[in-house]
Length: 124
Length: 107
Image (cartoon, rainbow over all chains, first blue to last red; front, side, top):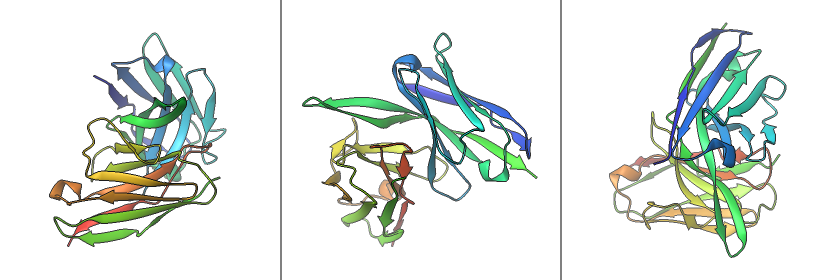
């Protein structure tokens, strides 16, 4: 069974740093596209970052240069290092897998599994 | 960046109704479109990928259609557990972007 468990959320001071973890089971993070998605209180979903199976990473403009996504295949865990945190980073952070779905030679990489989320609160 | 716009932002319906939610992309995304359901305090649940393909375990009351820039999610025979917020998302290019959400409420 695929499972994702996020940890590391906390109350942090403005300008501080925090590292989130996403422990996976039932599959290997190293052969999948792993994402972070966040949701500010009362707001919609915002994609944050991805580490692709080949190691390429991508970021939303709102976090580029401040956040770093990484993975440890031996621990089957994905991380999100968050630096220079601002109040706008306050959100529940979800870890999500983009599964690979192929039909007639065309493959789609779409979210198929989500963790329960971890809350990051940045205080001024 | 590709902007995703959902309509309506909120919708009231009754148990047993059939409802349709629309999602429009600011540029052609072919069928690289997903739909998600989220209930308060819970993680999103993946419903549809490739605009119209249901994820495993998703009931056939959910259906998606569209290609290019215009897409729809239809839910037939609404049950109490279907009242939630629904999001579309394009995954054709980075940054991946979501619609603002459609809140489906009980009338």
